[in-house]
Length: 315
Image 1 (cartoon, helix red, strand yellow):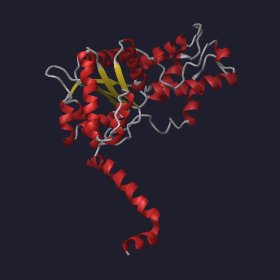
Image 2: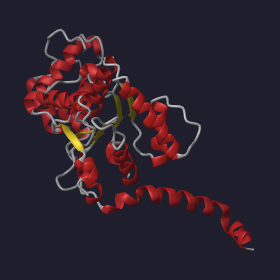
Image 3: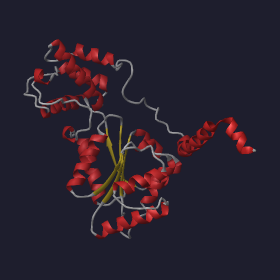
Image 4: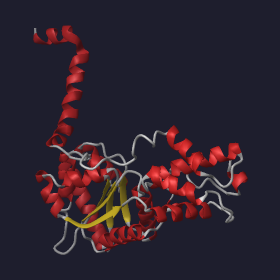
């Protein structure tokens, strides 16, 4: 709708994690280098931690492109709300490992043989789990045990856990100290500075085909940074709606008043897009989450039977 008005070939601020639009700050470059180094040198465990909307998934997509170029075998799990049974089913399916048995021991045997075969062929195998802060303790323990699949010199499976700061807090719990001690490379993403926000917006406009004519006024970008707290996803949100509003009002370049209007619409003048300090404490309750879900399912099935059915069973 606004592309022709601003001379753009495509929408520059879509929220989908297109790796073409990855803005390479020094920190992002360091994180990418850490991820690739950890995988190439078979470090075993690598973590990628970052606040919501700071580009983790986009970075992971860039990593996936690199893994494909290197012809590295990869399993990418995007739904981290799974139990241990589902974990192994996902892994086997992603690696296209055939196993008729649902026995975990048999699945582990097939997975181990697959990893040994790839290692013998000097091929690397990687498991990436996105949104890893949602993993339950039993699943995280199974993931830790997967690193026991090794030779005398190498880990057979390289594991990347990507998640929000809650993942970092969870890894500090005493029950996960064995997993925490196995993490060899720690990477992170952070909000942009005000200067980086200016560069970020200019870079995305350039990739989208902007001809160099100003689209956002400098003060408007300052206001965008203030409301977004440097979070790229929120910057995209503000910019996308500002472009639409500016098109309707035939406003170019975009001025601060329009940014204020968009921010109020999304209540960014009332609620910050980042977690408040001290609000990410993880309690011991996270370790009961998987058993709670399983027990809840059983309880609900009994409830659906109704009192009469239960009484009949007792007779």
